[in-house]
Image 1: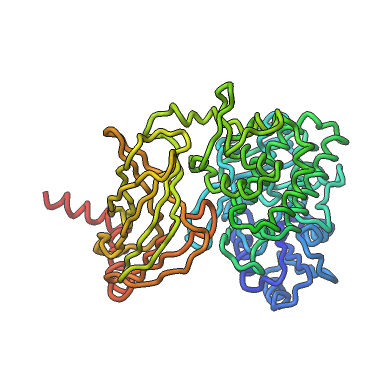
Image 2: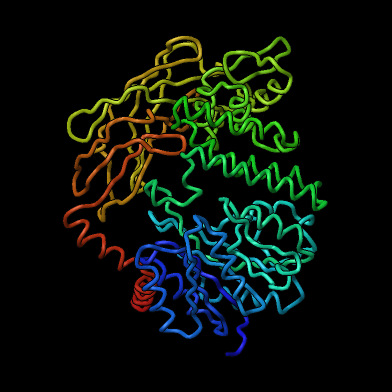
Length: 548
């Protein structure tokens, strides 16, 4: 057999349903001189039969089956790497795909100049909505060749091994293999590859399609989506220790602050968004696991974070766990704390007390948020639904509490509006917020979702109500937080099934879902979609211009 140019390893475990899709994406590559190794981690479903069928259909495919299940991605990749015949190597997971020209593009980068690996953009595709986005787009925005990771340490954030094509000689020269027996092996492998590579090339074209299932069941969720497991936290921290040791031993200690910043901004941040949904016992164990490691990180790594993220981290370190959950609900959304405290020097701190240590005062100092002075339209408030009661039909009654920690609002009742806009058509309901005590207001609103005006073709999608404050001719629109758990309400409005439910992730908003039913779903929407296709639109424009 002739030597292939590239070996693409497809790792699989009990994924017979999606294996064919993954392998077919490799078989369709525009560069055809490739070897495809299906590395099966001792599957117990129909995966072996599917792999054997695929190998019988295409002589470029080999089926490699491990003698026992390893429980991870490393062993099947390493076993395939031992038998790979090509000078260049790529890795693909069985639930993902390669774009048709991925091999051609990355191989061209290798043939253009001598490099240790080439990497391209990763396209993330949500399995629930089909929405596509680019993973770490700022890092792959332009074509460039770097003489080592020190030229752009931000690349430590792009820790996927699957977005790259490696020179076999580079991996063998350094004995670089995937660490077995641990999860998050990509993070260690990629950190080592970045540091050991003398030169590598980045291309902006997509070379990998990563299918993300954010709401998969616990058993089916990917490792990174199993954040509810404390073992998951333990594994992630263990890998960070291994990376730290490697940086020190390989002479790359100068990258430590960049790597620590990546851990705080990416790894810790993933857990931070889930904190409101965890119980006290879980939070206590989480703090026990992460706090000792946080204590080892470079101080400069904390200073590079947004203030809201620093607050959550410090509240965890100070064992103010319930408050950490409250602070985490506002991450990325400009949600104010319920209360702030000012010291004798005029510094403002998150919460109802002045922190006791100098470090805690630095981290919980929210003076830079300018809660008292920023323009009213961008001022930070906190709006929470404290009670939800079902009304007749598709209506609900809400009790809303607004926190104004900087006392921006005048004494007395405040005018507000509840907003929700399905299909781009806004439903407004006015309400009055009455003072409860300084900095706290409360009001009640009756929201009848049957009054929302929907497009003729119906509306499919999710919306979250917002709260708008009115003051001296100005408005301020902010997030409306809901109880984290409450009974789901399902009802019908004209031609639609309507569901009100907790958001279940992120800040935890009231989530309203519309799904067309009847004729709207079976006839009207399909017809409108057909008319909206680019080809139909072009034909309509041609006809219109001909009739002028």
